[in-house]
Length: 190
Image (cartoon, rainbow, N blue to C red; front, side, top):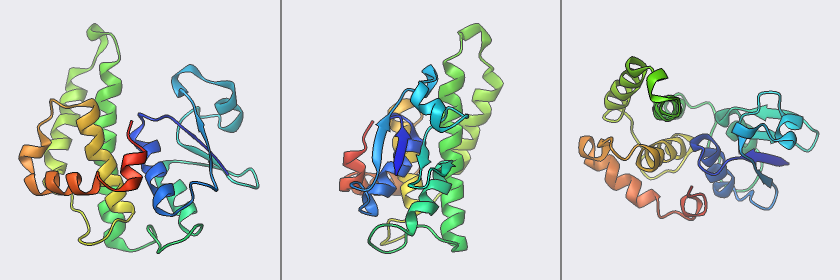
């Protein structure tokens, strides 16, 4: 298998953490790319030119971080980390939405200042403010919901440090400090 990724991408990090947790690091060839430059090797793999993108052994293309994680869940050792449990999927979905809101702010801010849509940025800020107090980790587990949440919160720290999410949820802040020490999180830092 081959995974196209970009180190700062929170979506790619989610998949990389999942790969480490499933003990699949030796089974997946990692190809670091800058998707913003339309590298030929990425375009040959996926017409979307987005990361992460997984090419399976039989050349099946899987895109979107959650779909990739669900595909990888049946491979590798250890207990299942994804699945169809409604509570897990609810946590993962809310955490993924938090990640989306942060990512959209970052992308919008890359536009020239006079072309940025401030109302859109403000909307994403409000979504983050509403989501952080509601997202939850699973006690005693580190599953797809927790991986997504950890990557989303770490992305806020990395790209949007001015958002004071830790003051809104000290318990979540303490939880992130704890899970950030996991080998999978340490190995995938941007």
